[in-house]
Length: 236
Image (tube, rainbow, N blue to C red):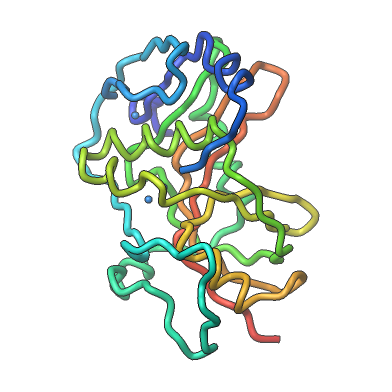
């Protein structure tokens, strides 16, 4: 059994109120240290120190460019900008289900302090996974708490990673596994390719990492945060 010392627990005192008062949800991208960046200036955080893992987490952005507001139509044979990801990088993503990932992370999210953000920085417990889902075609702006969690996660790895994920995740995509729906932040550069290569109802293989969770209270299940770094269309 893994001890909880590999993660970061951040106790949110007024973060939720700060997010609620924001008039516009802004979006952002792939625990113990101190988190210094807070997107809500009125938030006050108490950080519970934990041991720092010896391994370095890996975030592999699929591209450095951002699609324009009016992207040109792409031929279906145009490769997605994933040149930075080697074959071995994607090979480390193990076939799993989202339900499995929820089950194996339950013990890490036990706390008596609410609300709390849990940030997972150890690569061994981010569970890089290949997951078969149904693509719905629905996208929405990323939740601001998820945005804060992802940015903080990146900053705990290194300043370079922290900078690279700013603006990399701006939207969430709704996917279905069995009968369960999940909103998953997706690299912004992948969004036009998903819309071009997939139709609502299509099966897809998505490559995701678990980076943490928002724990509101003892009665509500933790809202886990996954990040989608790549996808494959599933042939019928």
